[in-house]
Amino acid sequence: MWGACLCLGWLASLCVVADSFSMFKPHKTDVNLPEQVASLTSSWDVKKLRILEFVTAQHAASGSPGWALAVVHHNETLLAQGFGLNEVVANPANQVSPDSMFHIGSVTKTMVAVALAKLVLHIKSFGSRHLPWFTLHDKYAHTYTTLHDLLGMNSVFAEGDSDYQASFGVYSSERDMVQRLGSYATTRTYRQGYAYANVNFAILGQVVQAVTNQTWGEYLTQAIWTPLGMMHTYDWAEHAPADHQLSKGHFVCNGTVAGHEIQAVFVGAMGTSWGYHFDPKGGRALGAGYGIDVVGPSMYRNLDYFDKNGDTAEHQTRTGFVPSRGLGVVLLNNGQLMDKGSNIQRLSRVRTYVLGILLDIPQNELVAAWNESVLAADALYPVGDCKAAAFDSTPPTPTYHPSDAVKEWLAGEYTAMAYPDFVGNASIYVQNKNQLVFKYGTYAGPLIGLTNTTFVWNVFVAVAPAVTVRIAKLPNGLPTIAIDDMFAFVKVLA
Image (cartoon, rainbow, N blue to C red; front, side, top):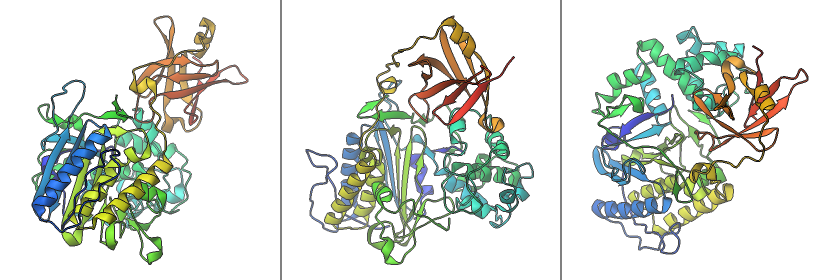
């Protein structure tokens, strides 16, 4: 599954989990550096004002079109506030409001985990028991992989398995994708350890469908969302009524819009860049739960904490929950940032800072945590790649012009050289008697020559603003093409 869509005004229904604090205001010369503000415990109303001023400033600094924020304390919604625009081009007057709908990406995994819990499925049961049509290339893993393994991200699947193909629309449905996994040779061993992979929850979504005879979205609507009053939450944006305020996705670069398994993903510089602050020497474990990312003392003062982050190609979601305080924070962004690390992870740091305000964390601690995260993020990703083809609407300049004979040699149908059923097919054809066009999945776009072996596929999708295509010639004379040096195809003779 690639992400549900929900309305900010109903986020309170999602937040089962609070307390208090301080205020942050960006430095006038550098929006990444908070000013030193007196650390005094304040009333909820003052905290709300401080949070709104802080988030307003950070949204402006991000360059992203629109943000949304929800803060819940026990059963009370303290804040449900929009910032900026739902869309930049088509309707620049369309402001983000509590009724705006954002893609929540992988936060959908939390919903599916709740669905499985409500169905009271035994998590140690084997996945193949629920999906008799489902197979794995690794037959041992096929026999013994349980729902627990999939929920805890401890399966044979690695990060990115099937994501590339799904991004290009190779699969006709989630079931189609899951069925094709049987022809793909996974690289991980059985229960090798934690590895985040979206495909685990695509399989679990099919388990929900097999058990209930409903899609996972239909079941969640009937069993979870409607009883909770979440009347504006949908499994796919396409299922939302036309009159709803859909927050459109954007790409932003340098201000231009165009389980229960121990894991170490969020320990060290990577975790700090996301706004986490965890001391592995304290004798405590940081883990991953079922449908959640981080469980454990990864925030201020070893408080109990968990969250689920969600990213789609063009949206970001960050959550944070402190059960002992009955506190929940959700932040949404409709502009996927693609420049330096501190801007890419700004929403994560804002989540951490807002929690600190609510938890009465001293200002000097908030400032130190913020600055540490900025430095870590920029060290990991110091320079953004704002490709002109994407952000300035400037197509790549061709430096190689294939002859008619080369075009004829390249044109035709192609099949994947490895795991063709899983990877899918591709094609090249000549458009307007001149332009080579490459098609993969549902995407088609011009091939722009750089050299006689290197082209740029001028499409803009989740995986990249432009895709490198490399051409080679087999001993038998047939052309091969490789996209992003990842998947290779060979021309099929008619």
